Length: 315
Ligand code: ZN
Image (cartoon, rainbow, N blue to C red):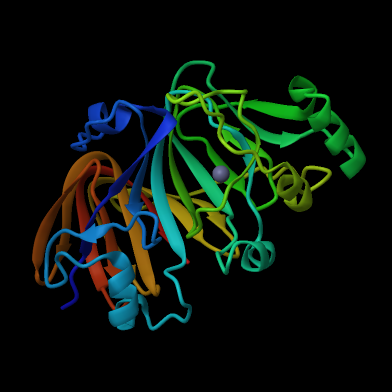
């Protein structure tokens, strides 16, 4: 009988980070500038570690290399997905990510980065930056050179439960007061267009990547509105947000007890609210807000019980 693979996240300090990953999720982190929880990651810049069971202590990258059968013998050098929780206590830099082809050529074989955001919580009137107004590359360059950020950048109001799909080439940024769960390709390549002229504790500005940003940005911006599809099953509400090239992402809201069948190469599960149990023939395991686990290939039938909300994804 296959077991769920529970993972311990890695945390990343960022100048825009805050304390919500400790105060909201209870993670044992010291820095008051913690921006990112890399919850399910096999990326070399921050790997999650198996926290229990036969593979305890192994990194997700090692599991991918040594036990590909857990992932349905999927092909590929790198584990394809990365799940994060981001606490934007301050504005993130205005940024854009390359696609696979550009990243492979210009970032020593990295994957491109298409990502998506589920808004876990946010302040009233919180916003994100999503897209831009330039109609041509010349116009885009002109507005960057003249620093016309208000004219160039499109702002969107957000509320808890919103979902945004952010394909590579999309100009974007989280703004202060937004807590999100991000599902993305396993990549750490970000091109910064503008960083609000901020300096770090040593007085240094972070590097910008204007030319690369101009190279990869989709012009004009293509607005993608996600239309979530909601389905009721006994004991649960299933919301399908996206089924796209790199990932599918769902929200599972369990009330009581619901039956599922895992027939994907693997499922990534992150608990965002409540607590409950994952029940199989082999027994039951406790899950709660802040738990992250993978259900491996061939996991088969299982039940989720309790009052619990999860974001679930698969390639
Ligand atoms: Zn991004």
